[in-house]
Image 1 (cartoon, rainbow, N blue to C red):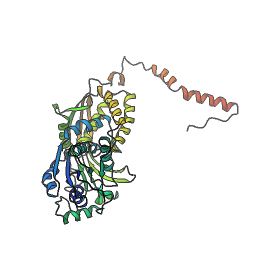
Image 2: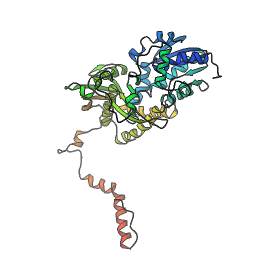
Image 3: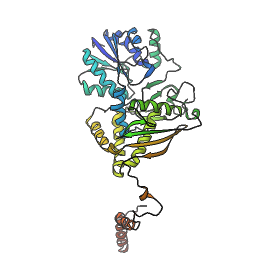
Image 4: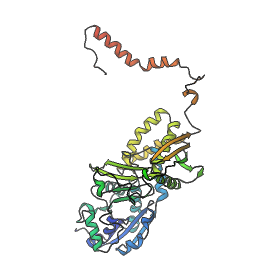
Length: 416
């Protein structure tokens, strides 16, 4: 390692990877290490973080409160888009660009030579961090020790931490790789690496944001969420900001076993990886928002928006938040949300999210039009002309096929 740095800014969570990185960087680069932690709702995980960072060799620690920006500028736009990646609600994905952006700002302020992160060379987060760094500091050097260092397993990291008296909240037996924020909690590693193994969601202490469906109450919880232009603004008639909405729905969803996902997903680097995701409030919010769009969006807009949602999710998952296309898609989504205002009532029961009712001043649903009873606003005789024109291409093809066959020609390829 001939390269020398005088000051490195480290993306610091206090977890296993970044805990060992502070002394490791000082050992190998003989440099000042400034730690930066983005508070996106990790809660108690931030307790004692400054003391730990300083004790292990950091010159200072920034703890940046990013919760409101995270919700308003990243989570809510993604919910409005309806973006999900293979059913994953993108909890880690849209947090990383925001954190990386703030780290770049601090690195520039501190006059750092490089930014370091603890992401593995197999994972997605390395891409998300580094694409954001490229967007705001294209000339900044990035150090990613997992790609070349000797601590090439979590077991070796634990041994290194124990040797250097670095306090950890895990052991070799509880060494799940986790990511927690105000939106979700992910679990990877250990027994989860084999999809043949049942996820231990009923094991005490595994789930942290709620209980399993089997452990949920036998009585359902009913909740009503109000949206204004696609943004949740109230729960059960009580107005609150989106951050508070998510916190409350996390509580209600967690208590009722909602939002647990066992997924084998396709990582960016090409491999499949299994994770268990807890997203109780987010899952409720996605369901409620989609239900409201059912009555407030016209068919063409709704169907096209569903196509956009797939691309939007891919961009978020791949760390391409700060790109012209993501910004353009958000502008499109915002235009579709002008009428997505109203109330959605859901029943939460043992992991299920059951629609109860949906209302909106902009509803496109007409009971008079849809009724099976007698009405005076829809002439059913019009359907004959509609079907005649709608099916004209099919009829013409069949008629022409009859003519060709009658003349001894080769019939059109079968459509059966």
